[in-house]
Amino acid sequence: MILPRVIPTLLLRNTGLVKTVRFKDPVYVGDPRNAVKIFNEREVDELLLLDIQSTPRKSPIQFDLIREIVTEAFMPIGYGGGITDAEQARQLVKLGIEKVVLGTAAAQNPGLVSDLSRFVGASSTMVCLDYKRNFWGKKEVMIGGGREGTGRDPLEFALEMEKRGAGELILNCVDRDGSMQGYDIDLLAVISSHLDIPVIACGGAGRLPDFRAAVDAGASAAAAGSFFVFHGRHRAVLINYPSRAELRATFLGEA
Amino acid sequence: MIVIVDYGMGNLGSIANMLKQVGAPAIISADPQVITGAERLILAGVGAFDAGMERLHNLGLIPTLERMVLEQEIPFLGICLGMQLLGRRSEEGQRPGLGWLEADTVRFDFGANPARLRIPHMGWNELQPRTSHPLLQDLGEEPRFYFVHSFYVRCDRREDVLAQTEYGLWFDAVVGRGNLLGTQFHPEKSHRYGKKVLQNFVEWRP
Image (cartoon, rainbow over all chains, first blue to last red; front, side, top):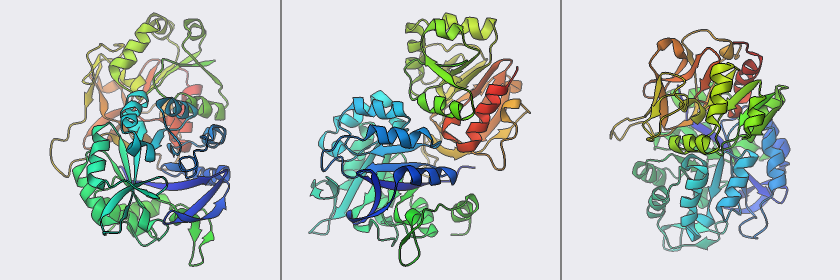
């Protein structure tokens, strides 16, 4: 029996972990090594580690920190942030990163997706599609940490990424980031019905039934940030991950 | 010493990391001399079947591997692509495999039904043991393993199948005969369950 994957998304800012709301107002939530250690003990399905400064600030990929983090974590880890060429991807994979995530670079240089797919394999090539509703109410692909519009339609962009060799697509709704109000189910359903590759829902999860709703809409996996690092109404920082029994009940129980 | 065969197909560091955790340091090497000194061999890797065979061939490793595995019969573990290469051929490519097991690698095919399962089979799944084997002993409660693959191995001989996994159909997830073992899943990405499998391999005396 295979259960959909439930994936904590950790945002790296300098050497600390933060959590944002609508890609803004980063709140410090802890040390990445420590957090990954806890997630490792909780036996999480998978982790996503995204350096939110590497691309906008053009700061270098923190290979040493990444190495420290992955050496003692025995689950698949995806890394994104600041990747601009296939050689960096190869280096990351060599360190033990299972999946390499492209965001801004995939939009600016779509050929890089094909390169990565060839060099590290499609199943290790992930594209993170950030999008938000623009001034005219249309959903638009965003780059540069959600700051810059591309004028591109998410579905059309997602199809191009699949065609270019992406093995997975993270569909990340900027407007819902940190809101804990649930995923953008509408677009998730549209995109996953048009794509053959796995689609990972991201942005807005606040309760276990949100994961189920994403999967029922066609997502292969559900990612979240706040859900795994905040606890209670006052958003106290507490790293947590549902038990196997909870996940089983979430995905196999009555909806 | 355990040698992880470095033939340029994917991430081998995680396997070395996990072996270190079970107290069995390993060397990652493509040097036939180092491989000749191995007490145990691991052939892992991800990627295309033909690319894998081509790399083994171009590195001149096949005669060395055959001497160690088929003649000296040292314990051998193939992981993911490394397990698929043990068979005769794959639907993924044209090149013959190592041919050490009577097995073929075939593609998952769920047709065009819109509710079909997605390919690759990616995520955590369970094993259904078909026989008892030291590799799969004491895995703890509800063991689960990380899989990522679009092709699966089909053994001719049912006695070579140690465990199966269900994804649309039952496929051979762990195979073995004599000193040969193969897992379709990635023990190095499978938490304590995978760690136990690697530890079992390290302690195994075929």
